[in-house]
Image (tube, rainbow, N blue to C red):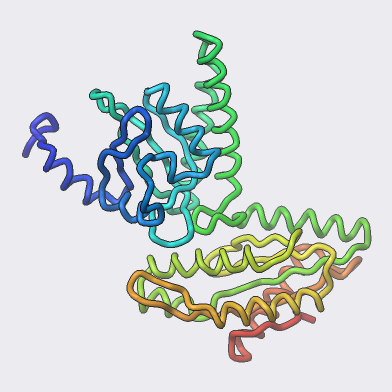
Length: 321
């Protein structure tokens, strides 16, 4: 077996192409020199990008520019398009100097909640490290402050976001629902929720595989997020279930929204790498009853209504009693 010093450029190229993480070699200005096949999948979304920063939102591009200028080994988290779909994914980033005035950029996708929690721990350790560093110069101190603020924001975001769909995770959406229930109880305001479930999701996973199932989850999440009004909130409750919170809305308004979401998704084809797939959803609705409901009983009624929609043939909505 060859040791690391005996590996040729061709050997490294073959090795990097077999790694699922997106890897790119860039110069100190961020200009792309070479990249592996996983990075190429994301680059197809930005065919004219010649610089690493051009593949990120402006706030993230500014952060990367700072890291390139400093030229040291860096580690952080953020969104990156390492697939050919419209949805970016949450990634663990590394930027490492190669010793020849170039930098190696690595984006490894965060797949699970456990991965996300590990990332939060790493980011918090970075915050502690930044806080302990002495100020070598005003510029360095300012750059580190910018980095520390960005890391704190990233840690906060990762802790509350579902890594697959970028929606609020189960813990966050339940907490938000509890807050809305307290507000409705205190001010006697309207509040409704919808529980959304993807129809035949197990069949999709069994037929096409879990990667396609993940793509379906992401597409449905985007559809729900873009299809609700402000200040409604949608979060991933778990598996293929989502919860929509509708402050200041009664069950009639929630039903109108549910009918539209079902219809729009029914008419929408989800484009996959090797074809397309039709997906439908079933929705259960419940309106908060002041003086009677807790957040738990409200959720239970909406969940029961969703199962009623399933039993009635799926691809529909039902208002819970």
